[in-house]
Image (cartoon, rainbow, N blue to C red; front, top):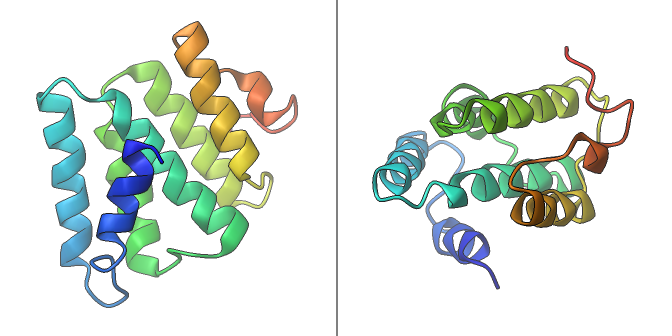
Length: 130
């Protein structure tokens, strides 16, 4: 189990519908990871939540979606990664893309090997700017 999976499991009792203040805690965690030199975990957490929303219809409260779209995705400092994740989220939101667990794992593995996310993980038609 990865760090991201453990963090989500630890937070699963905390991320509750109707408790948006907990979403601010996640924002603070993401910012703290960046400050501590552990920003590489931010993208994994954001993409994990996106996968849960897209494939399993979990973590779907309006508060969580809003926090993710407006804040969590923007806690990523690297311009390319922030843009890639933002477009991926946008494509999921408009129904152009279903972000599966396999895509999540391929995206993170591709980033580990190549140093950045690859558009090929999403398919040629899935990464059109919205």
